[in-house]
Image (tube, rainbow, N blue to C red):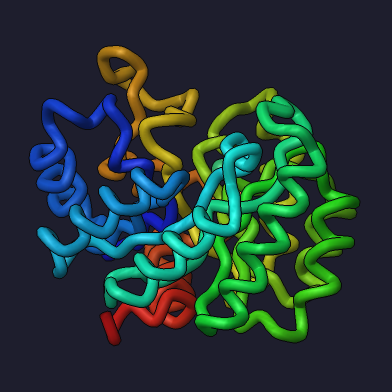
Length: 265
Ligand SMILES: [Zn+2]
């Protein structure tokens, strides 16, 4: 089984002491490619540095998470552009989007930063890695204004409603599913909805170190998630779609390779 983890926060401090071992365990579990999420200029730089050091295993995204949107200026976007241009390992713009659940940045700042990221993605002809929490209506409003210019976009860590899912599918977007689906309470709706996602639009991710699959046994110390647990998520996705893990692995890997143009890195 060969898998692509499309969202790993590998620059997180929680991987500081054993990053190489984490990458090694991912390989041992068939997770052959990891897309390292950039969430700020400095984390995007680090993601690019990591990808340069591991060209066979890692790719990077560059962007500013909606949590940091309050400090996302024109200069910030220029720095993101420069990183994306200078590093062939950059396969998407993001993480960007709207988070009206935590509201760490004012909503107006989040919306402005999101629009700037979409413009940049259109300019560079790169796909977009989108985060959305409690902001679906606003998000599709902004997306609709840019959709025609965008090559592709994925709504990562999808946890929203059936309506939201179908709005995204209608817009031709891809969907990223995390270990949220392994939570029999919080993930109950997703467990049903995952069947609605056409195979050619579905990708999987750990969002490590966050979102440890709740039913993982034995539980790792400290509750840290890591890419080596992606096969566990693939199995849950397969179970709820009525497919085999091998089918899910083959199709999500093929989709990720096409979406991020992984073979051309
Ligand atoms: Zn996110």
